[in-house]
Length: 273
Image 1 (cartoon, rainbow, N blue to C red):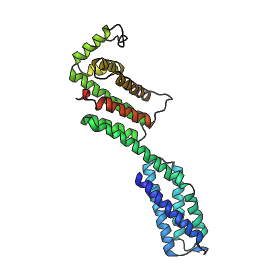
Image 2: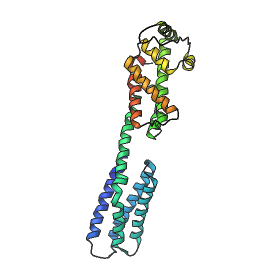
Image 3: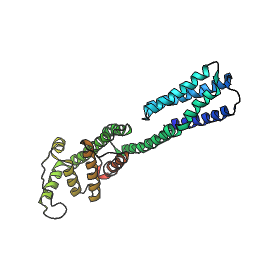
Image 4: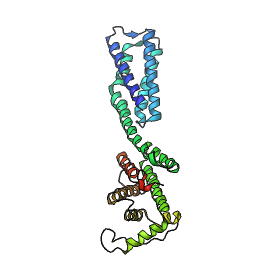
C-alpha cells in the first residue's frame, strides 16, 4: 500500500506539471505526437493505479470509477488526430482538483491501518504451531475488517492455552484449588461457590466457564489480580463480539485485546506448554 501511495504522489506531480505546461501553451490544438504520447502514458499509469486501488482498498467504488473515466478520457483525446488544449486542460484540472483528498489521503490512512495491524503479528512470537495456524486466521480477519471474528478467534486460542496449562499442572490440582476457594468465607474469594471435579480437557472445556477459570487461575497464582482484571476485560470484549448489540468494535479495541492476551498468556513463563 505504501508503494501505491508513492505512485499516486508521483502521478499528481506529473499531472500538475502538465497542467502548468498546457496553460502556458499558445496554440489552440495539441497536435504534437510526443506530447500526446506523454499524456497517454500518464493516463495509463493513472488507470493502473485505479485498478490496484480497486483490488487493495475499500475506497468508494464510485470515486474510483470517476477517476478511471477521467483517465480514459485523456487516452481518448491523445489518440485523436486533433484535440484542443482546453479539453486536455479541463480533464487534468478535474483529476487534480480533489485527488489528494479522495485518493492520496485515503491511501495513507489505509497505510496507517496496515501498520497498526502489523502489530498483531507479534502475538505469534511465543505460540505453538497449532496456535499459530489459528491466530494467523484471527489476524487475517482483523486485516480484512472482520474485527469481531478476530477477537473471538483470539480469545479461543488464549483459553485453549489456559486449558492446556491446567492439563500440564494436573486436573486434580485444579479441582483441589476450586474446593479450597469454595470453603473461603471472607475476602476476595468469598463469593466463589463452585467446586469442580474434572478429569480431562473435554470436561474442563464443557463444564468450566471462562470467568470461573480465571478465578481459579488467580487463586492458583498463575495470574495476579491485575492480570485477572485485564483478561476479564478481554472476555467481556469477546462476549460483546459474539452477540448482537450496538457497541462498535474498533481496531484500537482489537490491538489492546491482542496485546493483553499476548503479554499475560502467550508470553507468560507460567503458561509455557
